[in-house]
Every structure is written in C-alpha cells, then in structure tokens.
Amino acid sequence: MSKLLDEVQQHQEDSKSYMQTLRGNWPDLESMLIVRNREQIQNDNKVYDPRLATIEVERTARVMARHPQGKPKARSKDDIGKNMLMAMLLDYQMDTAKEQFSFITKLRMLSLMSRVYGSMFALVPWRVTNNRVGPELNIISIWDSFPQPNIQVSEADWFTQGHMLSVQWLLKQVELEKNKENKVWKADAIMALASELKRDQDEGDKVENDDENSYIQEELTPSQFGDVVFPKVKAYTEYRRDRWITWTPQRQNSKTSRPHILREVKSPYPERMLPIVAKHSIPNLDTPVGTGPFERGKSIQFALNSLVNLYLEGVKTETFPELMMNPNAVVPSTIKFGAAEKWFMNNPGQDVVPFSRGGNALQTFNSTYGLLVSMLLSHGGTTDTSSSAFTEQSQGRTPQALRLQAAAQATQDEWEQAMLEETIHEVMYRWIALNAHKLDGGQSLRVFGPEMDDIKGMYPDMVETFQGNAEGRITVDRNFFGERDEDSKQVRPVKWDYEIETGSTTKPNPDQDKETVSDILQFLSQNPDIIQEAQSRNIDINRIELLKRDIQNKGVKDVDRIVIDNAEKSPGEEVEQPGQPVMMEQDADMDEDIASVGAELLGGMQGIPPVQPEQQQEV
Image (cartoon, rainbow, N blue to C red):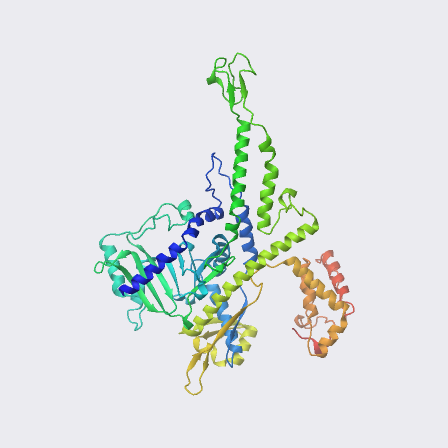
C-alpha cells in the first residue's frame, strides 16, 4: 500500500511540473474570458475591449445549440431492436444527466473552455442514486487536471483528478456499501478521517496556494470558508485502466503518518477504458494539452486593451492639461478647473499656459485601433461591417469580401464542430458501454405511437403498461443489449459503436431551410418525370408536406386552412377529389396575404402529375 501511495503521488507531482509553464499562462487567459485587465498600466484606466471573448462565446452558441443526434450500433445478429432501445435510452439519459449543469450546458462549457485553455477534460462516471441510475458527464477544472505527460489522454495509462470531497458524502458511501460484498470505498480510512475532523472541530481543507487556484476564483471569490458541520477535504484520484486510487494529500493517518487512501478498487469500466475524455481546440502532437484561440490572440487583445487605455489617458490629459506657471506672477492656490473659477495672475494668457504634447498620438489612434481590431477579427474568422476600418484590410466591405469572411467563419465553426463531435462520440461510446455492462434493475422509458408499435413487434414481452393507445412504458436493462448464447443461455455483452450525425448540434439556419424547401418544390414542379419514376419504384414524395413547409417558412399562419387534410373532415363536409386543385375561398378571417401566397405556391405546383388514390402515402 505504501508503494502504491508513492506511485500515485509521484505521478501527480510529475504532471504538475510538466504543465508548469502552461499553468502560469492560465490566469491571463481566464482574465480575457471574464473581461478583467491584468496588465500593468501606468494609469487608472482599466478598460477592456471584450471582442475576443465575445467572438468565442458566439461561436459556442452556433456550434453547440442542440443536443447531439446519433445512431448507436450493436455488432450482433439481432441489432435493430437493440439500436432502437439504446437510442431511446441515450436520449433519456441526456435529459437527466444534470450533475453540475444540464447536459447541453456541459457540452457548451467543454467547447468554450477548451478554446480558453487549449483543452478541457471531463469524467464519464456511472451514477447510482435514489433518483437516477445511469452514466453522467462531469467537467474537470483545468487546475485539477493532471494528465500523463508526453502522451495523449486516449492512449494514456493514467489520469489524475483533483477534487474536494464532502466527508458527509464519503460516510454515505460507506453506509450504502455496508451490506455489499464488493465494496468500493475503504470504510476504516473514511471513519478515521471523519473522527479526526470531528474531534478537532476542523473546518476542512482550503486551497490557499495561488498555484492551485484559478484567477477567476481569486478575482471573483477571493475569500474561502470552511464548515465544521459539513467539512470537505482535498483529494486526488488516479484513474488507471485497471484500477482507481483516491487519497488525501493534506490529511495524514495518525497511525501511519501517511495520507489516507480512501479508495483502491478495480476499475468498473469495461474494456480497460479510461473514464476520461478530452476536448481539444487545436491538438498538439507532443503534449496532452492543445492550443486555443485565446492563447493565439492574447497579444492582439492585450495590445488593443493598452491602446484604448492610453487613448483614454490622452483624452483626460487634453481635458485637464498640465500647466506651465510663472510662480512669481500667479497665486497657485487659485488655479482650479471648473465653472466660474477665478485665477489670480499678473499677465493673463502669459503667466499660465498649458503644456502641449502635440496631437499626433491621438490622431493616429483611429488607424491603429482599426488595424488591431481587423487583426483580431481576422484571427476569429469574422468581421464587423459597420466600419471599413474593422474589416480585413485587403478586402474591404464589398459583397465578395463579406462572402469570403462568411466562409472563413464557417471554416472555423466547422473545425470546432468536428473537434466537439469527436468528444461527443467518446462520451456516447462510454455511455453505451456502461449501459451494456452495468444497467441492472432496469430503466423505465416512456414511448409513443409508432415507436410503441415497432417495439411491440420486436419485444412484445417488454411492454409493461399502456396509457391509452398512443403512449406506453417499457423497462430495459443490460440483458436487452447483449447477445444470448444458445448453449449456456447466458447473455454476453456485444461490441457497440456510435455514429454521430454531423452538424446535429449546430444552430439551425431558417433562411437556408426556406431556400432549400423552395428549391426542392420548384425542382419537382419542373421535373415531373422524377415523380413518375419514383412512383414506378413504389416510392412516393410527399409534395403536400413540402408545400406546407414552404408556406410556413414564408411566415403564413393557419396553414391547415390552406392545405386541408380530407381525412380529418367531418361527415357531410365537402371533400375535394384527388388530382383536382384545392379551391380556396376568401374567408372573412383570412388575410389577403395568405390567399395570395397560397395561390402563388399552388400555381408553382402546376405540371406535377396528380397523386392517384392508391398512391397516397406518407414518406
């Protein structure tokens, strides 16, 4: 045990020393994120131009706007039902994985913070609580991340995480494991630690070393407080591929005079995976931490801040200039700035004159400021069209230049999207593996309509209860995600993969959707042969749905009053015959705009062969 403790402590110290240069740069990067000026400025102005932080926050909003969509794939003989159930389970778990923050917020933070530091790391644990059983996602502070040096996390043998552990939480784990045969936590060490803290009325550990605290913490919440009733202790956990070790560096066992080892357990993860994922901004080959736009744009941002503050100091000097006075001809105490102030002197206009430095510095501010802003916007792949000084100097504000800037921004968004999707894939891969190996006791899911019909056909024994005809509830566990051996009748896990839908997290583009739907509708109207070819192959294209979406995209309300579903008409109502144009009457409540747009769209459908009754089906 002593040898193991020496190993894990040496690993943590090696990683910290390895990243010492990076750690020294993090306060500057964090100050850029929270818009605080850390530069040594020789005046009282501490104005900060938040352009770089704003560019990256906006990029996060575009790239990580929605929950990811993807397809889990089981490599087994009977995988269609497994894939469907696993996809439903992952959707449910994304909605309920709310430790720290909601799941989508955590992905946004991984995206943004990785561009601050270059990389961010997250833990993917399995949680069993009173309210939830399933996988989670916990972001690890970069200050508490200690990766194995000289190797990427995906290939590392270990990764160390620092964290503050509540003693009450540790005692609860001991209580939960009291009657279990396979225990995770060391009850003796935890009870001894709790007893020592209670005996000494100890408030717990505090991180007071500047080398371990973030600049954000020091700047926003510099005071630290303990709690005698609910103390916390600083701990480190080294995650290896075969086992996990947790110890307390600041708390020593009174008997051994060595730190407490609170946990030393075989890794619960399948396939010898590390429970750690990395999100890189721009990966580096030689180090586990990448490079981000905050570091790359730091010099420009700091120069911009300095220039603004120097300009403000110049404005102040112009407003309240230094004075050159003849001490023998004036009364110095009367020299005051303000309305109706009186100065006493012998020769007004001669005995007191302002000192002039010349206006060249202030005159060149606009051009220098425009140059720096242009450099920063170019660095971020964006532009500001409100002033020609803030656009790329070589392009200006022509339509072609703006298209090039939009392409540059899209390229950087696509890079960030690709890096984020790699991380999401690693998270989902671990979630699927944990579900397939550890989901005991079952997970209840609610399903609707067509999903219920499909599941009833594949797994009729899984349907427990129904609520009407459109909603039901099923319970799944790891046995449904394995493959049954016909000889032993045992269910063994199968290999899984996850295929993320590219671009599923990005912010929708309504203008692009409008253009796409209109183009498709126009293309079909001009090429009726395609409709006939599709029908000959028993494929139908739902042109009415395209029509409805086109009307909605144009902002017209009450679409159902324009495109009427005959199947929903009450008995006795007039029903239009298939193949005949829909006759629109000008209703008293119908806008003229609705009528004109509807007529225009229906007119665009001319030339499309009518749909025969036996060919009407949804696609």
